[in-house]
Length: 89
Image 1 (cartoon, rainbow, N blue to C red):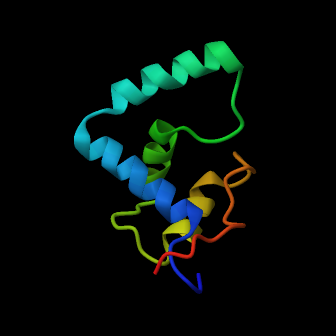
Image 2: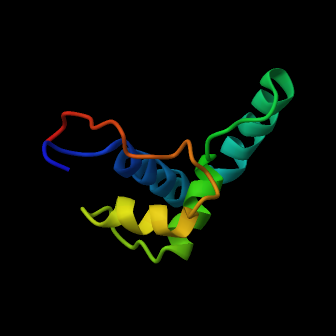
Image 3: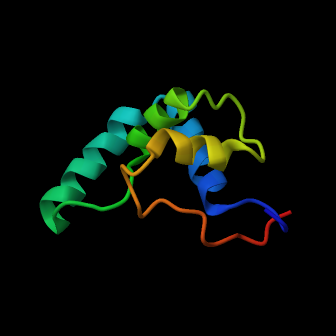
């Protein structure tokens, strides 16, 4: 992480926001609808990401959060990687 937040850190922040706002069931309903319309997905939903964050013991979105998350995922989801970096400082 040279110039700011990674895609994974942004995703973790969104999952945290979803959890804190109590809108998890709303997001789950949208995920189910999109699965019906578009088929199965290859990425991780915000609800799954929230669970993975807990498994990884991530309490704050810090520089080591992507590494901890990737450790919790293992080979379970290859599409969630930090190949891109948002230029946010």
